[in-house]
Length: 137
Image 1 (tube, helix red, strand yellow):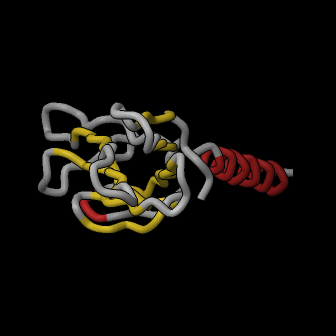
Image 2: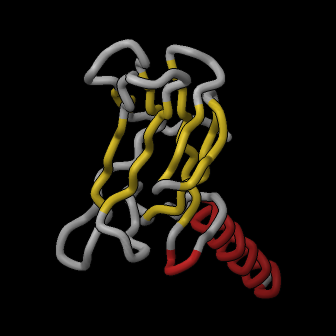
């Protein structure tokens, strides 16, 4: 009887440990440098095939999904630049260059929240807006 009680106690402790481990609050995902994790930012434009740059580096043509390494709270991490810039390059000259700028975090202030979607309207001077969602890969 005593052995049976010890076995039940052990199984209960093991089950409780498994349950607490399954309820972990850490978000799954790819880990990045400096304690960051991967977030995915969808970039869309009013016209397909518009070239998109991030921090003056060509990222591809819209629509595309960009992997951004941010702080665990979902904000932009400072990798040495005070801002993260996404801009759409128009196909013609003398057109608007819609640009979206995000502040990166410092030790005393967090960065801007990483949006799920950035949309560039190539026909308007204001040119862009963001939607705060986290899209699936």
